[in-house]
Image 1 (cartoon, one colour):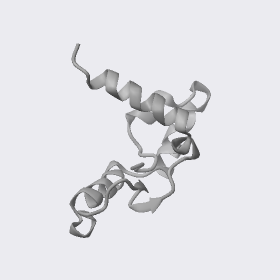
Image 2 (cartoon, helix red, strand yellow; image 1 turned 90 degrees about the horizontal axis):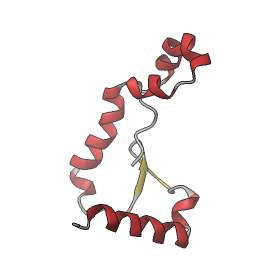
Image 3 (tube, helix red, strand yellow; image 1 turned 135 degrees about the vertical axis):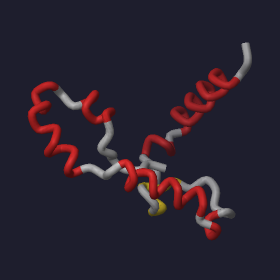
Image 4 (cartoon, helix red, strand yellow; image 1 turned 120 degrees about the vertical axis):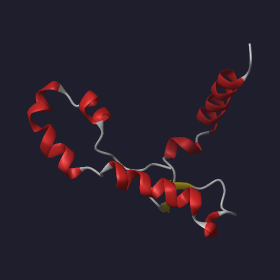
Length: 89
């Protein structure tokens, strides 16, 4: 699930220095934290979605995941990394 680009401090952290004077304008074009959270909350609590699994959403709309997610080598590498992160030492 991708909530969209949300107006948070993270945006300030990744905004190039040359765009710093325009931060307030940038933030006005982004989702509010409440708007960003609303999609995740709906997807987590909507009773009609309790049987839905393995889907990708942009905000609260089902969408095709990025092309890289269909690459077998990338998926295998992501799986190996995930196992490394959760396997106790």
